[in-house]
Image (cartoon, rainbow, N blue to C red; front, side, top):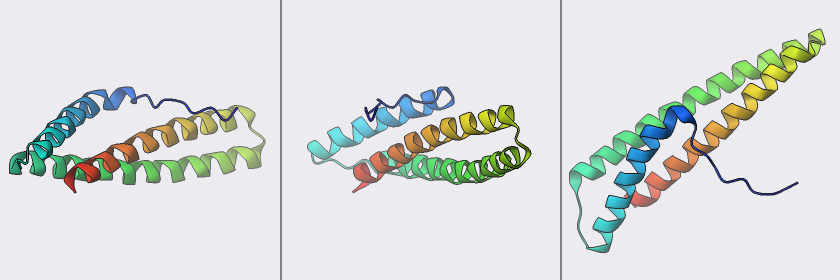
Length: 110
């Protein structure tokens, strides 16, 4: 209990996360060399906006799952509760992963 799990990229985000990590590494290298790449900076801003949109969508989806959970609890439907709970756990993990990507972009853009 209480052990920290290493975050795993949700399968649907693997390609975007890989591309973003390559861009972040390039930005870090540029900073070390004292260079600034305006196009790379712009690409990172676009990626950040994209991931922030995903966060907003995840919040909407989470609110929908909360309603499904409440309905299942009120109905005493254990199968629906399990499905809603599993959906919330997966979504919270996805949201956490995306939030960390946004954090990394913000750090790179500073």
